[in-house]
Every structure is written in C-alpha cells, then in structure tokens.
Image 1: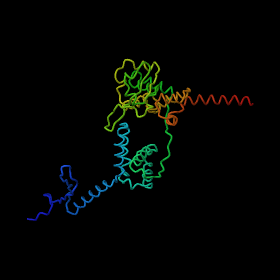
Image 2 (image 1 turned 90 degrees about the vertical axis):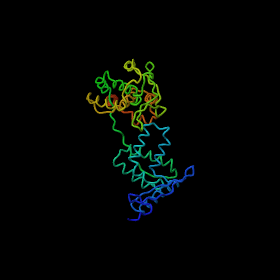
Image 3 (image 1 turned 120 degrees about the horizontal axis):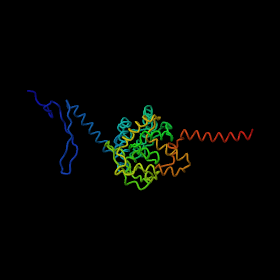
Image 4 (image 1 turned 180 degrees about the vertical axis):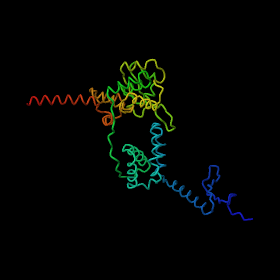
Length: 342
C-alpha cells in the first residue's frame, strides 16, 4: 500500500493552508489551496498572499476604483445613471480596468480611447472617459493624464413640423399615447416625467413636474425625484390639452417609458411620417417657441433645461417650414433694395 503524502487529500490532490487573520475571539483563520502537486498549491498560495499584500498597500485596480466610486456616489446619483455606469464598467472599462491605478499613463489611456473611438460614437466615448476621469480624480488625484478625445459630432436630428404633429395626432386620437404626445409637444415634458405624472399633480391648467420614472440597476422602473433642480417646474397647458386629461385618477398614463417609445414608433410608421423619436417632440416645442419669439429664459424654464448651452446646441432646431418662410421674408427684403437701386 502506497504511503500517503503529507497534506494529501483522498482525491490525491495536495492541500496547504496559509494564515489569513485572527478574529475578535482570538481564533486564527486560514486560507486553503488545493492542487495536483505541492508546488502548484504553493504557487496559488503565493499569488493570494501577493494580492493581499497589494490591497494592504492601498493599490487597487481601475475596475475596483470604479466600483468604489459608484458606491460613494450612490446616494446622490439617479438609478439610471448608476445603471449606465455599471454597464460602462463591465464593457468599455473592463479591459483597461485590470490595470492598477499607479500603472496608468497617458500612452495607455490614449490607446484605449483610440480603440474605443473606432467602434463607438464620440458622445459615448466622452461619457465613458467622464466616468474614468471622475474615478481617477477621486482615487489618484496626483495622476495627470494628457489625452485627446474624439471630436464632437453635431447630432442629425429631425425636428417634426406642425403638419407632422397634426398627422400623428390624427392617427393616435383617443389613446394614451395621444396624451403623452400632447404633454411632450406642448409642454414640453420628458418621457419619464409623463409616465410618473399623477392626477394630483394637475391643478386647473397647470401641471407640476416633481418626479420622473427612471430605470434602476435592477432593470425595474422607479419613480424618483428629477436629477436637476431646473427639472422642477410648473407648466401651464392650453385648455384642449387639459381636457384630454380630465377625469383620470392616479397615474395619467399607465405606460412605462419603453412602452411609450414602442407605441410611438408604431404610430410614426402608421402615419407615414419620417422617422423621429418621442424625445424629438421636445425639439419641436423648443423650436416653435424660439420661432415665435419666446425669450430663451422662458424656453429654458418651461422645458426644464439646466443650461442655455444645452438648449442652444441641441434643441433650437430650425423647422423646415419656418426656414422657408424666413428665407422668403429675407429675399423679399433684398429684392426691394435691388429694385430701389435699379
């Protein structure tokens, strides 16, 4: 009968134990490592001891630092923002996340950014880098990186016209989607704000916007306070919009934001309109207000935009029909000048 080796298990593998810690009762705890040979088991133990030593020295990987950043900010971030951060951490930040913070330098980060830029939009790359830089600022504030980000691209947005809106409303008359479209196009309210709206938020013609329905890390919809102070607002609607809501109790519409978007896509196709998003109804509202001479400050207030820059760069879209009218007015003026000269 073969003699049993020291630390040999019935399976034939070798197990060795390494001291881990002593608890408050004075009991010592050990970490076990099992491998086919003693040499392999010792190698596994040595790896574990090295990682433990690194943690004690304060070295952490970028991936772990992002986790800590998200945990630290959990109390002040919306569920949808946290969900987006976790998604970026597990996808775009996964590979570079294996590096320790003290291993990062401008060259490594630039190569990572360049690789991301080959397959992602400039906006997405900038969002990912925003999470990266915020994490580095928190856990490695002395690390100074020089990185070139991809140039911003102006979004190709279609802004629906008055005729588009009339055509759409004729198709969805009498449905919950009609109410959602009216609140977005004549408010303008956001998709999540509409889905969270309750009858108690409406007094006469005035709608109080104090909450929004957003996706959480658990992939469920949650009703939360708005992300920015500017999103809190009171919107006075035309009488015909309020009449569509009268008599409803509880939540004004029973759809969640995805349900609104899905039904909206179907309605757009049925109406034979060019493709545009539900969110583009806010573009319509802002563009109409700008075209009829509403001051920027009031447009900001009514739409709940945080800054004038955001509104001007994204929402002040020239509607095609209005562009034709203005061009006609301009050219008629110049024609009169030409006639006077002649």
